[in-house]
Length: 303
Length: 278
Image (cartoon, rainbow over all chains, first blue to last red; front, side, top):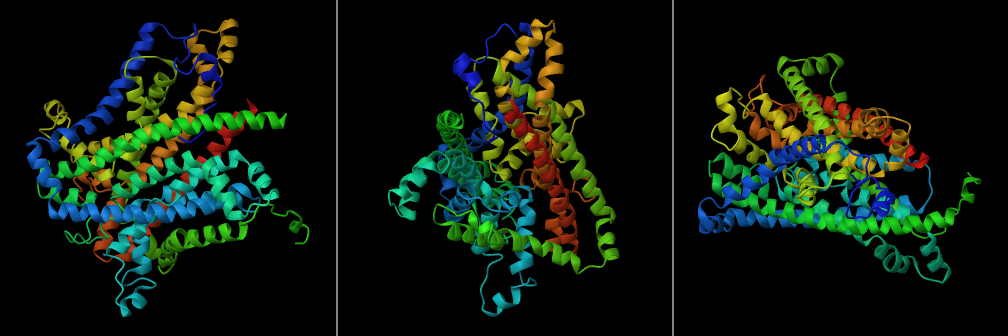
């Protein structure tokens, strides 16, 4: 997904038109391929998306409004926003630190570090919850210590936040590292020679340079943090109104057969998903432009 | 030691950023994950074997690995097809189609779960036509596969797409001028070029499917021995405070995903070296 696209083709054949060369298939083959792939996406992706909104407004706008302004729903929204804000902020700090150290310096074990950062991607969200139970739960390593001080983490908002930080851990870092590597060190070194301090270099040069990658990472991280279900589904202990996030509220309503209410609340996150995709497309395009320009620059230097 | 010191860091902040990175990585990821290994170490080998070979656990492994494999295979068939249409052809609605591909990444899994269940249940949009044909999807292994196809769908498309875009048309022109027909060009020129990307996409969507929980639990029906996936079994065992049982299953799942991560890294290396070579 985040592999680089070589821009040569696009430049050679114009960005708008994909290869309209004479080396193409007969039109029957072409249209069958287009039809099959369109139907595949429509059936598997578009139909679910449409269903959410159809079901959400099935009983009219009034029912929709009362479902999303229900006190339980509101407290779920509040907890979701808080969880997402904390997780995004924590992983943002980490992403900046990790990309600075990995992209700007040479050191042993860099590959290992990069692989370890990707680790939470391959771990099931359920396992990410389980490890915190083993660590901080009543029978866990620190369970007794926490219990003695009456600090509740598992089955409390803190547990939800911890598992959410875990599952969204790599999102920002892995967007920043390749872009920062591509930009190189020259501008920062020039600023250093001119006498700028470390923080000044970071805020004035590095940060503006990675702006789009940063936005891209943040929105992806945010979407995942708000929508996470597996990692938080059991943490909360399902105490309604106390430790529920939006996905958990959706589950409760669905299991109680309040279908249109469930889909109404679900539509909030679905809407967020659609917005996320739109911003993502925009940021991706900006990122592509930047990559292309810095690639051309670095090509010149290499020769 | 002193020789290595010669590589002086020009820019400031290495100690601070590196220190924070490693500390945060340890606190959030490595120490929590290590609990699985330590917890399993407290079991004897026989206890461990007994836990992971109990009929219910084995049935869940068979279902999880089987359904994930089938779902990844379906995506391997349709994924390159979609990527091909998006890169090579022009047709109305292409931009929207391209944007839709990413939806499974952005849509919360629980919402995907309730939506797919509603679509494929007896009176749903799709279910009402499929059920008279004798195809029960919701609450059967077939439903699990549908959910896993959904969540794994973007991986193959998004790994193949950039490689297809980067393919130089000159190579195809050369092949054509040497007398190759379209089918030969595809099998001899294009397919070998996208093969590592297809395999990476397969491994990514397989790995994602293995650990999936939210989208599957709603559509699966969750009958022990029949439609109970491994991640659900972990949750069930944890809720019953059966920590050894849960960690034993988790360890197997974790090792499977580490193995896949390893394979993906090797494949990714192959794609990258090809890029550099060209």
